[in-house]
Image (cartoon, rainbow, N blue to C red):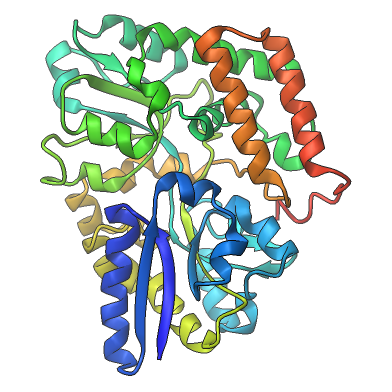
Length: 392
């Protein structure tokens, strides 16, 4: 029998699942798992209902959960897995990774991959310039102004990631995620976040406006143009020797608070389509992939970025990744969660375009941007006033 799975087309997204499928074949010789992959942009925006019709196993971004539950696209894992296993997953969650797939009292995916916006830098370039990674937002501007000629900071600014950076800054500045609570973002918080982003723009590599995190990290690891990125989704692959010509280091995000709080979490959950005909086998595979032993060995060794906290603390995992996990764990631990209500994905994309337009063209007025964002967020919720379990 065959199961079909969908992930995204990066070494981190595909290779560990191919290895997992081979390992599972040894446990279940009659089961073949075939994986397809899509681009990062498709992963973030592609309608989940189209995937659920075709695939049994789906690597899912947690903001899609509300729509998935509303349209009955996924199977609740509570009916397919031991309660003790799910409790262990929750206990060993990296930050809110597990909670991000909990919705309306049920678990809809396992957090096999954990991520958040962190900072990235080329240690070799900073050493040559006599600089250190920024610890505060003021440090970011000082560093950007001090870099030698030919080197700049980067900031992924395709719409979804312009939005991500804005969301992170707002969550840290206010110490809460207003939109995730179904509330308007205070005007002063949004304006302050925009002002911070605008202050970096004269020093940001121009191509940043058209790049997502993968494109930017590929560039950072292949040339000497980008020395520092204050906010970018972390990819541990780039911290491993030999993955790209130059090693990229990662650390916690800058913060003006006592900890690196507010980072908008990402990561990927492994879910099972409601159309899956072999749900018990799919669940058995998911349990294997999410287990601590598999996460800190085969999953990581084949390019994956584990979600299980024991893997993040594993000395060998950290040794092979330049301490990527140890050096960014505080950011993940204190991260913030996006809204997950049905219809949210459209808001995220539209908001990103509005924020990006402000950064590129200084239009419209900052206050108007925040007012428009709040109005867009309210409209995207429609009459759904339940904020249905989003913060649980």
